[in-house]
Image (tube, rainbow, N blue to C red; front, side, top):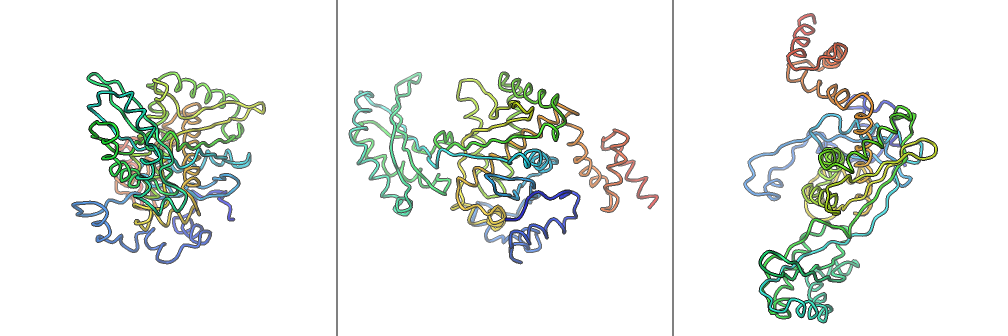
Length: 422
């Protein structure tokens, strides 16, 4: 197993970074050419993935270094347009690396499908009849996906909920489906639709909605890590981070931005692997509000050594088979780089990145402020906008940082001055 702890990885040239990943992960020439854009993503494939295709929109793909997860070193591909996200995750992972890195656990790969039944005269009686016919309902569901059942998955159980609305009492059946290494939306939706006529017959009601829920509270992933106080800037910074977490957990206005920072990391990995970013985001934010108030997805504490202990728990409906994960060549290469063999393993990596991203954000907020590092990276984009030549970008950024003036108009002036001299 190659180490993900590479000193000065961000300072290497693009070619040097790529060579490390190619060498360590055994990428083929085909995979490398797709990753680097030297081989175009086929338009015919794009046209088969979504409708009305007229082109493609590229997003930078980087790798986060320094991650050790459950004892294994991992390079983590992240697709994002936002500066500092990948650097932040890598820096925080470095602070945890020598203390063991990240450790994860999962509740499994269970998804819920909801079947809404209306116009029921005896909702409590209908609820009882559903449970009486549970085995027949589950059997009908499992006829829809014999391959999933053969792999040990499929419909395992059901729940019946009575939902009181302003007009009536709805009966809502939750199909409890183990989707294994797939995200599972197609399997769950197919089962819910197929079993609806039987549900109507049993209840005497009318089925309307039949669809998966993205609040995957039976598919939770947890990650924890210990971050060195010395690497973070000392005990005072650790105390400030804990206080910042307590602020977010108590105040939804702070929690919204706090959790957004977590999702910066999570969404980048979800996107890089061809998974459904909107499903994961919806699940995370709804889970953060499960108590009736929107709260932090993470917890932060100080241990007896004075180090920072962090943990995260959230739904993580991702897969390594099906959909774009197995269609998009970059997504397939990303999975190969991480060497993941199961959806649970992928979920653990994603949660670890989210925890690291939050640690980095809180550390910046608790020390020099969020803008210092972020704006330095953003200044590179501004220098490019100003027409800077590649060989001058670092010099332009450093001059702007030294002046503590990272506005576009000043960077434009610096660019013009330096390139006139050169």
